[in-house]
Length: 264
Image (cartoon, rainbow, N blue to C red; front, top):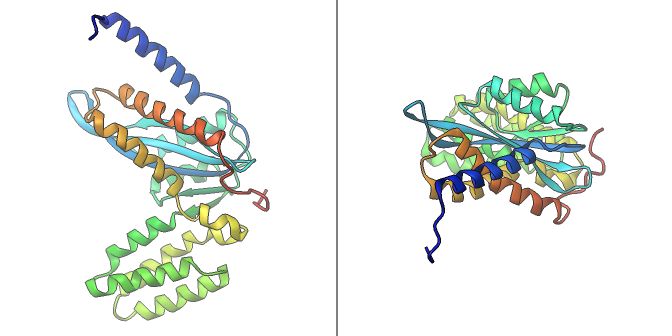
């Protein structure tokens, strides 16, 4: 193009320089992180002659000054506990401290890893995930909207006591006609109540893992162009490049939330 030729050696050298830069970014020192938001997405990768779904683990957070940050990213074959645990231990090894609140979905591997690496830290199960999960337990189509509205009212309650009262009422309401839904709500919805222990201004930002899911959408806009990745390293390169750019914007941007009043 334009009379210029680029050799394969030049391409390889440029890729190696980029990989080294992104490796430094992924391993940069961390500090005080008050809220940690965890999520994962899956991309197709060619591995050992087969096409597999590769898990991309992403950690975002809120710093002590209230700004958002992208803490880290890792590619692994699954979301099994061993992979989440290694990822979280890596964040701690880089100096992450001060975490008072964690938001994620209810994946069993992630929950087990959190219990092992961040014991005692308040955990909030994403309310959006809970709302979507509940629909699988509604057996009558004409009740799906009502069930969603009842759960929304519970999560929008002004206090923990009111949320518990509304949950009890909903469980009673569905116990006869939608017994599986009622049992599921009683067991699972309280996992979305940790946010009620935070000051009210923080709740909207930390009731869901939307901060991480919004990132995932931006990542997918780029990975869709690439399609199938030839290996795990190429996937990690692209995702790391996207996240490093976004992280820089976040850390130099506006305050996301005030961390004043967050538990020590």
